[in-house]
Amino acid sequence: MSRAPQQPRDPLGWCVALALGFWLLCLPYLTVVAKPYFDEVHYLPAARELLVLGEFVNREHPLLGKELIALGMALFGDNPWGWRIMPTLFGAMALFAGMRAMWFATLSRFATLAYGVLLATGFHLFVHARIAMLDIFYLSFLSIAAWQFAAAIRQPEQGRWRLALTGLALGCAMASKWNALPIAPLFGLTFLVARLLAGRRRLLLSRRGAPVPGTTLLEASLWLGVVPLAIYAATFGPAWFFAINPITEGLVFHHQFMLSLQEQVLQPHPYQSTWHDWVLNHRSIWYLYEPVGGVQRGIMLIGNPLAMLLGLPALAWCLWHGLMRRNWAALAVVVIYAVSLGFWVIASKPVQFYYHYALPSMALLAALALTCDALWQGGSRRIALVPIIGSVAMFAWFYPILSAAPLEGPNSFAVWTWLESWR
Image (cartoon, rainbow, N blue to C red):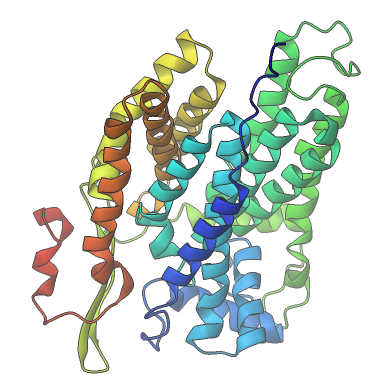
């Protein structure tokens, strides 16, 4: 009697454990900096004004990220815990959702857990999960969208509600920060292209064919097009009720105003950089480096030096396997990386910073996880583990300068600034 093919075991418990461990790792020294630092000086005042509907400030960014920071302040007080607790939770959610997206895209336990470890130790997610900025929120919502979309394709019997959640998450991602805008349309475009390739004669109304059998293209356009825009618009609700500078001339006019603020010419900044600096991990940003409570502390944003560089050939491998062997997960990672980075190549924003690479770096680490998985499945298990173990070791070495841990003295930065451009 022939056996049924063995079904891969879902590593859900490990995903929960990794996300919980990451969240706990975010808590030490979270509140040791008792004053706003780096871009918190922009977003905390905006959150305070939201709580009292006073003056509408920081109008160049959408509201949801600031509303979530304000929620933390309402629950835990206007103090470092209240400022930063929501970013830690959304950082853990981004990690969990990213792993779930990888699982449903590949059904590979190794790829899923490898991605979780690489993402947790890749520096970007950790640093942004510990500061009251907007980036962690859009990254988390995009990860949720990827998770639900991949699950809808893998389990089409659940396609309707999973596509609805995808649209909800996309709307929240765009409403957190506009960095999500280049990626948001890819979900609907993927559905459209897959249905076109399926060759259905009734393109809009056919329920057959990829990517989600049972769902028509017309219905998918509702979940992936209309719902995100409706959610995005709804998050601006409080902006109509501010006592000072409320929205009075409609959302369209307000968005024209937001765009003008985004495109204004800024003074050169010592930490500004360009996309090729990001790709080569060449330019860091110091979010903090000063005595705090009589002890020298620092927070440097740079990518994990090992994983960021190994990810580049991994992207090439994913491109080749995606095109030549129809590995759709690998191809999706390349497309996300290219689109999210390409946006900044052509963007009219004159002054750019390394934190704009946070989203491309997540795709880069996914490419590295997929490459390691191919090595693992091919029998080269020791080689497959080298980048993962190396990433953990690199994170452990850099942890003091990522977390505001106590340092020995004012010149301690030299231990971690391996390149002059990191100083």
